[in-house]
Length: 117
Image (tube, rainbow, N blue to C red):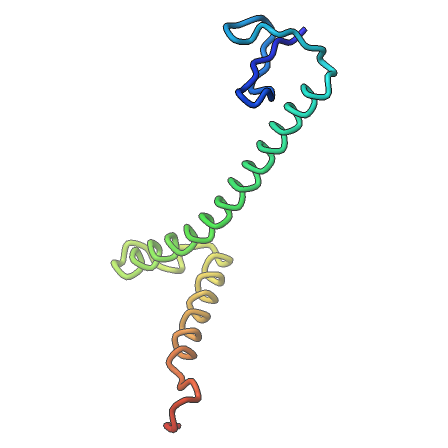
């Protein structure tokens, strides 16, 4: 039977397989309090996993730009040629380069507040 450690509020803070200091209260494994405690732990773990995955996705997007910059530096220094890369990689890099140039161009266009054409 599990043994529980309760907090000042009387709620379960920890569950152990054997008695410990402060955790000498035996409780049925199917007790609703035990089930609620275990469910809360699962929910917190799932939330932490979702948050970690989301942070990893954001980091992946940031790393893509880092890799692009590294490749561009290596090409500029003559360490590699763009043709050294697989064709699919060349196409992706060129497309991203074109998109960035387009964004820079569009950013430089007047915003309508100026009378300059």
